[in-house]
Length: 377
Image (cartoon, rainbow, N blue to C red):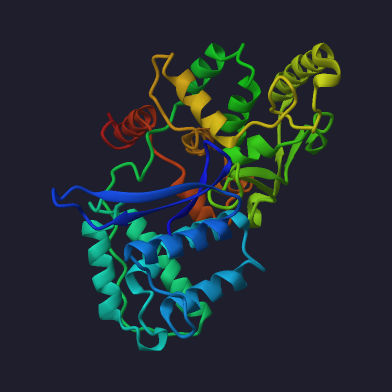
């Protein structure tokens, strides 16, 4: 099904492809204004039957039926954001492609045919779907089959796309971090940017951070909550939840960062005093002038806009975590210490976040040349 949250109106909508017209152009049917996901799904089924464009009905024993039941079971133990991703994959790709097959009769040839179709025609424009998305479809399907105790032998995962930066835009050096923070000193989210590059906080962790979890006397930030984007789950597309696994952590901060956060709190207190009873104090460290929480995407958009104002490499907000790991490694911080600071489950993940920047490469070249080429001279 193609049921989504209508972000413009705060309601639900459905949209699906119709048969192409005589001119070969793509056609779609869309209806808006449904109060919840179920209403939109029922209306979509009726609309598909009316125009003769049906989708596999989730009957027991079929791939569609068993995947729907599987998603209902996973509501008990899965994080809302992860569940939203699984639902999207199942409804957009797995049910339309495999839904009418019997689950017990499913074989690797049908699955491989689906992968090839998605790679060639799986996008919403009937063009190629990215290999990264097809690999995600594979992982969700394999997880579902494992949970349902179904074994399909010989299924091959589509190969990844070669990307020289593994999806990143880049990392900053320590000097470039300093340049950015100096330029943004007057920005109302200056303390947030500092937490990104110095402590490696994620976007959702910034959006969900509250004052009771900030202990400036002891120099510690307790990362125990986050605000995350979850489109297709609730109308505003944002959910609040605890971070998963080792992401729940306590991050030590030094005197310089304590001072920056104190300045941020003083500015926030001044805004609260000016707003008076109009201020909605929910305890967020980073909030709007009226006290309301920011949408997580606000941090991404603001960071991008600030980067465009400065003559330093343009990086993504999440690359701030890569920058944190890289600067830490260049200054001798042990991998296990940075692993805890970033909230990674393993040191291997932290090493993936650590990159060789040009200044480091030049220092490495000088050290190696001095050690080998100039020995005994």
